[in-house]
Length: 457
Image (cartoon, rainbow, N blue to C red; front, side):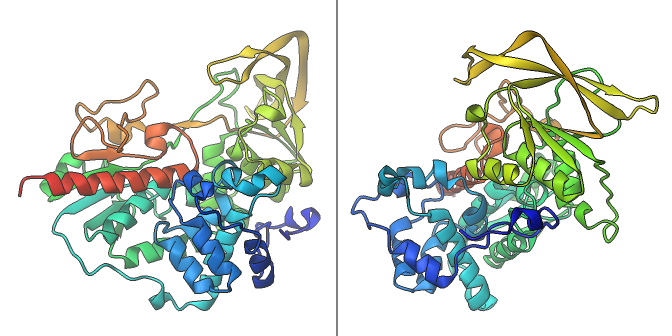
């Protein structure tokens, strides 16, 4: 796929890949074998009929293609950009045996973008005529909450999404950079969900403004908690509270949601300085490092305690980071953050490792090499080692069963130990992918529908 030149894109926050034009999309779609029992479908948490929409593109029936996708997926422009297809549908493609599976994600993106350019807004959404009396509250407007709300609205339920921030989208809005996921596309897809009949209440923090018990008194019969994992983890090392140390959560929220990359047009400065170190090896670490480059840092380093093979980030993200000049310090762990007299970070002391035996994750454990310590001069340190569930809402729900790490425990249908409360996405699983959260939203919507139908009338 064509994309911006690395030397140019590090100066802007525009999308890196350009996507397919019509000719390219048709050519790629024509490669699909149209398997009679397609394995790719089993790898899609959004349950898209992949061969059908690809066939429509191959036959230049682009409007049919997006209609097929939207039968089960209300966020196609998002999924086409950030879903890890290489680990989901594409890895199951029969053509994977040749090393060149169908580029399913880019074809989905093409269909969504084609609709955006060619189909009037009032022709894109068709609300159901079936209306039910039951009210459902969805708490959180990230990918899990949006998907669950949309599916329930299509079933005819009265759905309200309660979002604590001033913009909807959750991690799609505050966590993923503009150059990977343009925010106007997120807002367009949220707008379409509202047109299905979903009510969206922003700046409405459940657990503070109202509790779930209050919502029960307001007539809500079921609840889906999709508040994500927004509480950042830290390293627990000396000097981590110095000025110039960010959690990736704060850093990306400033850059994305608060438009720090447009300072002084927007009132949110982020001074990264010349030398930036990001701790971590996931997509969030790559996003943070690539944002730092675009904010003017001259040297950006990724410090990761294992090898590149163990990195959880998408291959595409790692590739783009390297293209953009980001240096990788692998088999390296942070030991201590050292500051100057003003309390500002200046040095990161690190430890070189070698790989030992596998740990609980199945990955080989990094083992320190005696005497192999070194210092890195830095102006900014960004900690991107994961997030956990925010306990603010959970503390207000009596008897709700939580896991060891504070996540909500749910059954296979997303139902908690409290009958009318369901949960899904990162609040239940810990930090995972956008598409996994969407899949959880779909499963929960079906389970909520069954629960409400089984209630005594």
